[in-house]
Amino acid sequence: MGSRHIDDVFLGWSGLEKAKYVWQELHESFQINLQVEDIIAQGEVVAVRYIESGKSLKAFRGYAATNKSYAIVAMEWFIIQNNRIYRHWGARDSAEQFRQMDFNG
Image (tube, rainbow, N blue to C red):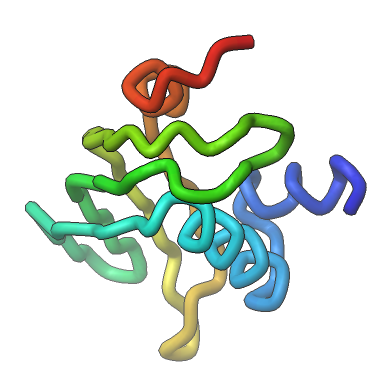
């Protein structure tokens, strides 16, 4: 998987299959749980703020599993067109997530 694939996912231009791959990788490695705190919708824009928590259970992109838990605040921003997600962006503090799971490097 090249960096362009990952860049497209995080820049909001990827298709569903690319996004599914990233979320599957995150879920398998960290057993992610999302607790929605707020949803705001106006026109074609939907914003979601949630608490993401999980635990390092499987190696992830060169980091060994640590069995340590994490919890961070994260946000997602969606553009909806024709009843489908047209674009998507997310903001999360991965550095804090990695610190809590004791990923060094």
